Amino acid sequence: MKKSKQFKALTSVILGTSIMFGGTVSPVLAANNGAVNDNVTIRAWDGQDDLIQKDKIIYEKGDIVIYNCKLYKCKRFHYAQPGWNPCDAPMFWKPMNTIPNWSVDDKLTQENKAPYEKGDLVIYDSKLYKCKRFHYAQSGWNPCDAPMFWKLVK
Figure 1 (tube, rainbow, N blue to C red):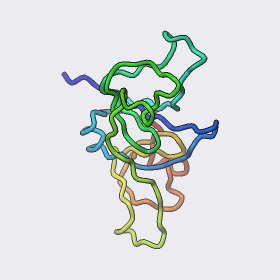
Figure 2 (cartoon, rainbow, N blue to C red):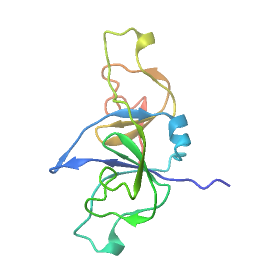
Figure 3 (tube, one colour):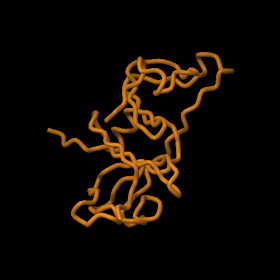
Figure 4 (tube, one colour):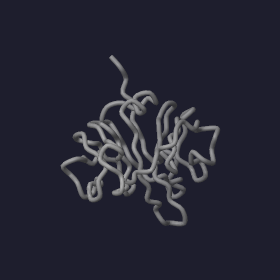
């Protein structure tokens, strides 16, 4: 029996302002990087300096996170700490891949627009969504406005 790994997504926070970004992670890319099935957790990175150690988020070896639109894999067990984000703590995080930005270009023909297939994962408005069925990128079909195509992953 395969052990499921959680796909943890971190959104960056700079000076108290959340950065909005979008992009896709195909099921193949996610599977190749150790993220499997629907067990997806999304969290805003927080050093949690106001909590005692036992109450902080735990990252285990092999956990995959998204931070500043890039995938990182945890190298070793540690608790969340201020300054230990994936960019600033290479002793804990190994960079993996960059997530492309989600965008729509209405000047393109349907055949040239980005296709989304059932199972594709998308970061939109700092939340993780899973594609329900095949479609091409269209204006107004973003995950917030098109629930017929997207399911919020909790």
